[in-house]
Length: 293
Image (cartoon, rainbow, N blue to C red; front, side):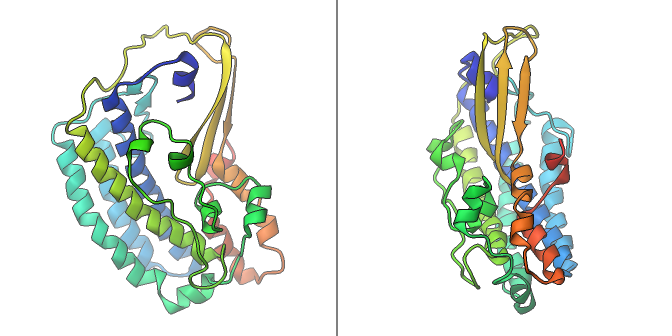
């Protein structure tokens, strides 16, 4: 997005829709990992098995798309590396039909489990004020009741054409901004991602244009600088780029969501039981590879 904005590129509609589709499948896969590993953090092993069972379907869809299950390199300057394979939308629809009922299964298994609620409700409370002071974004911010989502508030791509709700915590099981609220935001966001995926499938069936612009190997944006943010599964992912007219950026800086989110752990872990620390850190959903880039 940053390079394309700097260069003033307008992507084909089909390319933008493919990006939305794959981005939301990735969000589902990310939240499944969060759901499964959070159960492990608190001592529940079964949710991990359930979550990774469904995540395999997501990874199979990505492998069918580009041959890779983790390191995709699928989004490229001007669109996507490949077009969707034949019958790909049918496969995604099959996955949606299978996956959507599973979310209720997860809620029955863990979300409303009395022991899980005891471990997460009224624990690790983050106030909206603390979140804004630490530049927290994503489900952690929304778990504290702040309805900020770049897909709706500063829409990029074609997100302004999609109908979905921005999920926020409401203190349903305890205090607004506790571990349970942060967890529940991700669970409900999977439902919203399914809505977006189904809308993207319908739009792609009628989409015109190619899957990417042909920008060439010697693509050189004009001189200038730009900062662009997108809504990562864990929060705002931003890129600052400075160009001096060459094929490589003069300067590049990434703003990772989990780096900022991790910084609040000292604040939120003050005066808590040691046994609650794994529940608190797990609810923030840290990925160290993104923190230590």
